[in-house]
Image (tube, rainbow, N blue to C red; front, side, top):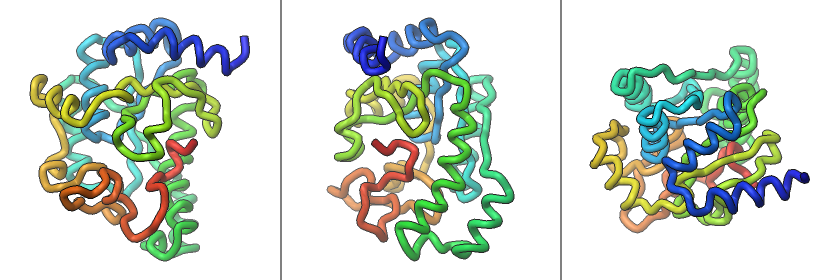
Length: 234
């Protein structure tokens, strides 16, 4: 069976399943080969709760870029405490960060899209590749509503850059549906969300958005791009 056919079959099989049901089935079909990357955003906090509440054998990991908000790191600690679990943390390599800063400066990512993408690669993309290595399924918290680029993504798709099947269980969830779920199950979330920060990444690259602005407008606000760091490029 071709990879394309395999993806199509999986998409059809998962189309009618809830996020909880889909996570349960994917952990059975690819036992021991399923990982979930959490950035500790609201979507990811929902998925963490779904995984832990069902005691699913899915490894949860996060990327610490070295430039995260203190509130994000505090949320990581609070999440581990609430769910009595350990989230594996991956870091960029020291040598790569030192070379990056030597080449472009400590805040050189403001100077060009090329510099910014170089920073994202060192701090996020390369550590992600290490985290995904040896696995078959990568679970993410992507939702179609988040951006025009993400609206084109499917629930299950092939990630060419990382050579892995990506499963997006919340792809069809609305923002209101997600918030209602967080409140119903008392899921811990980043207090920055209550201050206008919708999509939260590295502190120097994230700002609060104004009413009516796109959800991704607060990321890399100084540039005109698709507002992606390379983790979820098509």
